[in-house]
Length: 301
Ligand code: PSU
Ligand code: MN
Figure 1 (cartoon, helix red, strand yellow):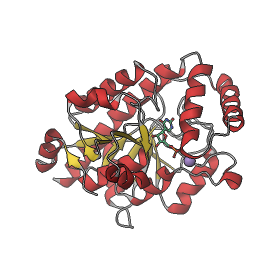
Figure 2: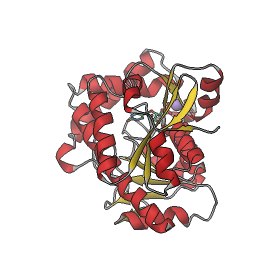
Figure 3: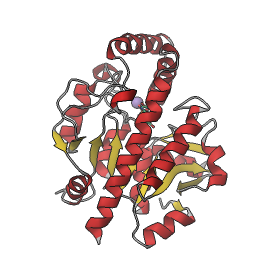
Figure 4: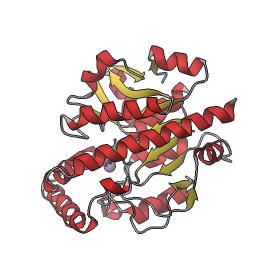
């Protein structure tokens, strides 16, 4: 699979300037309601540019795998979409899907194929609660492990089994780093109560960790806690998440449908309070990813 690069991304890579990849599920109807999705897209793009980098949104558009889109195509990213995980990319191409929204697993695969080594998202997928029965473990985890990319995220939502998610990363050999923070973040909240394996203080350190991986072609997870002023109240959230999972079970939702379903319920149950929190953390992750991409370039030169 070779992605088609936007003119701007191709030029930046040729000149060895920093590029940050983005997934497109968070900007589609599957990730955030309108108009917050458009706002998220613009804020993430702006944060990456402010850091001196070129943004590269990943997607499958009209059956073509894309790394970087033009402004005239933004509207296509914001609409209804089918989720494209890494394994679905080939299917989306062969079947000429009109718009496939990339998940984390697809985005890191496309970024790596295009030569981009830093990727920003909101939250990653993980090991689901009850996975010992359902076997539901997000393909994000293996993709983060097997492509030479730094994934920058605000951890994962607490409706997942966060201790098992961290165990899984240990098993597949992914360094999990905390950005100026000692705890694995739980997306809307700064701490899940689980200690992060390694705390890092700056972008140069992260870049050096990626290039020093002993196994070739393996990635790193950098977690960045949501900014303090945007953090939600954890006590209310626990109740909301438990209810969302029950509703999901009752509705008989499985597989790729689980995450979008639970996300939708969280939005409703928090009276929309989850939306500004989501925007704040996505923008902050894009900013930190920009710093890391600049550091990667410094290391390269
Ligand atoms: N978690 C979120 N918001 C999201 C997702 C996860 O808080 O939008 C999306 C991401 O695209 C992630 C995907 O890669 O869901 C994981 O889906 P699954 O659980 O089906 O692997
Ligand atoms: Mn799943």
